[in-house]
Image 1 (cartoon, rainbow, N blue to C red):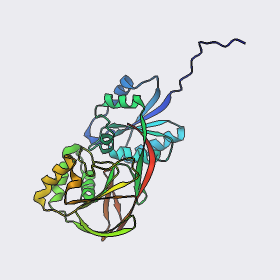
Image 2 (cartoon, rainbow, N blue to C red):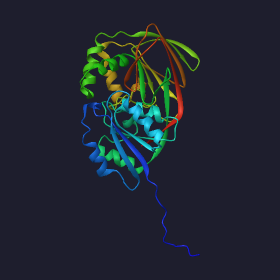
Image 3 (tube, helix red, strand yellow):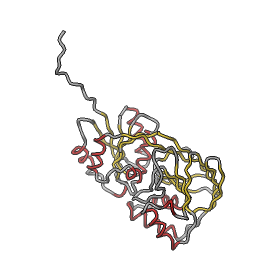
Image 4 (cartoon, rainbow, N blue to C red):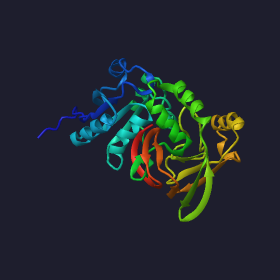
Length: 301
């Protein structure tokens, strides 16, 4: 029997689904399919794409992708779109990719993924995969930063606003901050009880909210811990100074910000209200249980 020396191994292409949120960040996505066709490595990948049609649709499309055995699901949108898709992929062998086109793009920015679509597709082509932590708040997954208090109220207001993008977020922040009052919380952090009055509380898996506003500069997506950030009450005239702290990556040095490293947290408050999960508001009750889930999501970076 003669064995040919010219046989080459067959490269099995990875199957990819791009899930495109057409309204995230107030940016048109109609050009994205063309950019995918022009820039994706078609030797490595076989792809399809779908546009979402409303809240929750990205989650349903991701579930269909997992059921069909698709290898990689790409979120084209912001942190809310990523949350819907990652909630399905977390704990599976499927891989998340990100093309950041939202209002904040916190997780994409933390992973150093370019905003330029063609360059972001170039990141996908390199197929460097890491496994990051996730967390849950009353059983609801989040992957970047979630919050209680002022920023949750902002997220709820922003969700009702028809305008998107950074300016819409800034406008809603200014409108809300004039009237908002800090609240008291009972915090049980890895078994130790604290009582704190807080303007807001941020649960940081990555360092930042988005737009390079770093609430937890020493946070890590892979350390098995959340950075639990308590923003204390402050006079309104100090708001620009706190904003400077965020954008200069020095929030952890502010006397108005207390940060705990933790895996299991219980927050008790006097009344129900909104929280946000990666920027998306959800109404919850007076008791909030937060758990860190180490090494649960595979993501291209």
